[in-house]
Picture 1 (tube, rainbow, N blue to C red):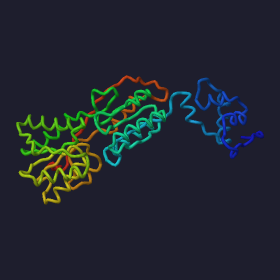
Picture 2 (cartoon, rainbow, N blue to C red):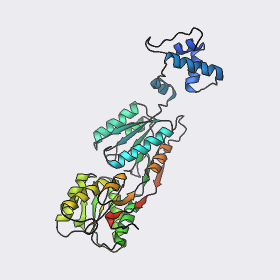
Picture 3 (cartoon, rainbow, N blue to C red):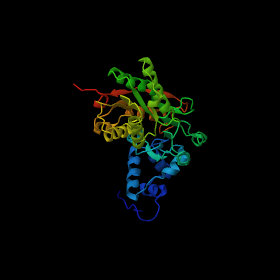
Picture 4 (tube, rainbow, N blue to C red):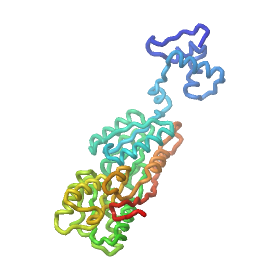
Length: 346
């Protein structure tokens, strides 16, 4: 900018008064340009203010703007374990969707710890996030800090339908039923399941779907072949080893998540079992990782992009126009068939 304007870079904190002085306008006009309103500004004046902002190196105080407008431009995401490929892939899709909405996504990892989860919720509320995307450690999270702070919450994956927050999830019962029914079509009659932790509604629903598919096929749900384990590789490995070495061996196993299935494959290999020739395996939450196991894993694939878009759409936008009333949405799923279940691609 020319005309004898003073460059104030390097003179400490730059304010809107500095911008107004260089642009030859009032601080109110500067505010209208920065906030894109509430009053219109002539284009020539607007360009003069933008040039002055660049010249003096002014950076808007986003915290002050958030306090004034009630909108921070931030969403929070809390997951129980970001090292889990499913949650990592979900976080990636959520980041894309929040960016499209003009927000920045802050990530918190609760590390499967309820106290840490509660503290993260409080931290995000103090940061005045416009909304919270949430996957709980269990099915009964304490969201009181978010509700008290009037922060809208959308629960993902581990959803309790009785909760007051909004939610987006697939139908775990139907999906687990479908993949178990697929195993039945291969002629397998001895079926096992590695369930998730009993306190998780997700785990109970997947067990329910497995049971219903076997009942429909008039097959026994043998209690010896129902093994509870953490949603981890180690959990799948230990549960798989128990199924393989403790008495009669099942012919097919439904691992309730992908990490468990990876651990189960390791246990099978260690005990000299060929998958699927001697032990068929199918799973849930199939991510890109399932393409790189040996053999490749069959399983339920959740539409993470669709889930992310639906969840972000439930949160208030930049101008808080979205309703806070809780909403609940079920997304579809697909079953991706690969060699681990006995499927032979054409």
